[in-house]
Length: 53
Figure 1 (tube, one colour):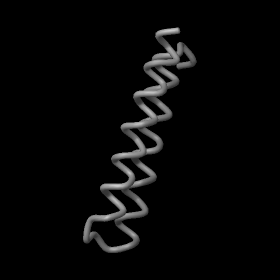
Figure 2: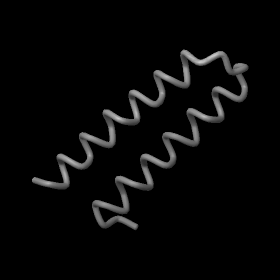
Figure 3: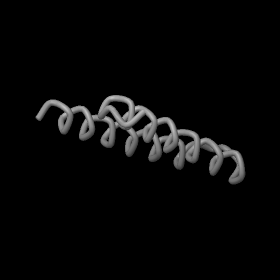
């Protein structure tokens, strides 16, 4: 059950971070790269906490 809570918190924080990056005045290609890096970090974090990696 605690893994689900950690995943839920990570996804909420990822959503907030993606929203902030999307609203910031960063050029489009850099904005896209930052969002991609944030998603990859979230996937690695969730996978690490769940025991996949």
